[in-house]
Image (cartoon, rainbow, N blue to C red):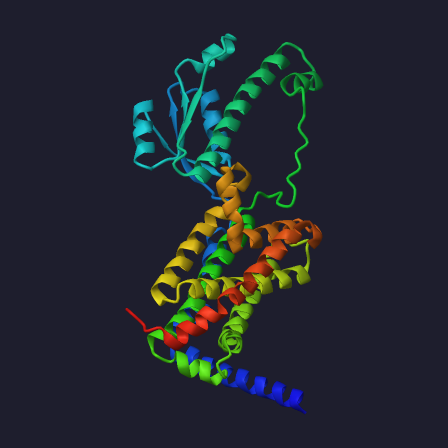
Length: 396
């Protein structure tokens, strides 16, 4: 009988705290915006921004001082590429360079005068291309197109010359391309930037909102002087108080995360060989690990301002330390070690290994254990949070 009564008492306490937190969520519009509106805006913003998969029709220019049918053919072929669009013709390299400096174009192709005549005389003329890497993505794509058109131009001239000398088609192809490359891009053959950028940026931003809302909800108990009432409803049990406070937020964050996954993997059909169950596990770990870190940050510094500042800084650094923009293996040793302290790093590795590539969970057990560790961090600061709620005085 005592066990049943104890269980009923626990359910009642959790129920009271749950209803109290629901009233707070409905009363304060900050929760609605940061838990639902802004995360959904982030999802639709990034997926629509990268809807084409890659940046298209990047502006490039041409300095064609030769102005022959051969040079004009090269320019037409460059303009036909999907990623580049010839938007201007400049009379000199200096004018084209100034256009790059004004950020009007990302690169230009320079064809000097007499190029065609030197080609016909087998004098090996030079054509040049210049590109800006101020924007790495745009610069690398323009570089690829400019390099390709330069290579194709020389190959076309070589093919015409060999045909004129009586070489067969097979001999010409063997000479121009002695080794044929059989290229296989695993998991993302379309090189779709949406697939590997959205799946890192959106969860990272959602993690930022989870960090901030968790610390904000705890800090406002001190700010508005309701902390003792909150603990009283839990019979001064800090674990029950935390569970009752975070449960409504957890359910909302899980709903938003599942909606994001349904839209990205179900509607937009992003590849996910790992399956639905792995996505479900990843969503649960994502939410609980984020909330666990938020509680831990507040427990270390029971101050609304300081804990939210730390969470903001940690979330922003996560984008660099996750390994999606720059590989962790290319960083210095101390930074590689520090990357394990960021929940987004483990989320991203679990996604890459188990969802995107479809490997078994055993291959990423350490990252799974790390996320579970972030979930359990609040155990380390429960006493400090309880003491802060009972004794600390809020200082703006």
